[in-house]
Length: 283
Ligand SMILES: Nc1ncnc2c1ncn2[C@@H]1O[C@H](COP(=O)(O)OP(=O)(O)O)[C@@H](O)[C@H]1O
Ligand SMILES: [Mg+2]
Ligand SMILES: [Zn+2]
Image (tube, rainbow, N blue to C red; front, side, top):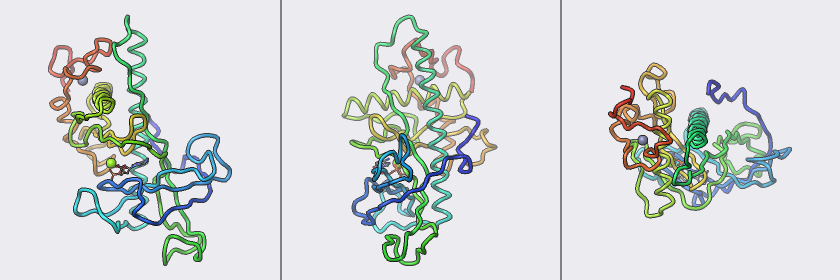
């Protein structure tokens, strides 16, 4: 994980997009971002992932100004081009780190299961973060531009965080301000929330109490919009991972994380010492 996402190092692709400018047909709206359906055609098509077929339906996400908090309303007030791309760049970076932290949790899990004498009495939910990239949209020409007045041909009109579309029910499994999984009436979502709380414990332990993924949300297979909570010692207390980085969260983790009621944490094969118990490091 020593190579953070760097826009100068990533692959670039060109193509065109079609966006329904109608704000009533959003895929979803959160407190900070809107998610809109976009049809993407890359030249040439990629062999897999985003843009592997012509007119690929993807999600295009943009931040909006929402002074009231809660879910904002139309018309969404956008940031300046510079602010918008800086915010989305940071989102892409957080997503990149969250992917790495989740992958590494699965490596630990799979290794423990391989080493155990008996398999665990439960199935491991398999989830991953969406594939994502930054999309810089240039106005085509004035006549067929959907970007409105002022967008000149050849200039970046809009930046999007492009993601695979998440279909079906969208759950917010664990909230940013807390390390407790939410309770759901859907047993599968409930199980996933419990599992994701366990992955937080794995990340917390394996990073020596410095970092874990929070704000886990998405479907039962695909996750998006994570936050990374870091201990104040990380990065000399600078905000490395954006506004949602609730530092208190890492300090409160041991208090809030409910280990003994978590079936994944409690399986002996995972070796998760409950906080405050013997053998637990004093972090
Ligand atoms: N990849 C996606 N595919 C489909 N819908 C999405 C996707 N990502 C987010 N959404 C929808 O858009 C909403 C806002 O996106 P999100 O990334 O959670 O922004 P916020 O920062 O405002 O929480 C989500 O609650 C969800 O309903
Ligand atoms: Mg969200
Ligand atoms: Zn635990």
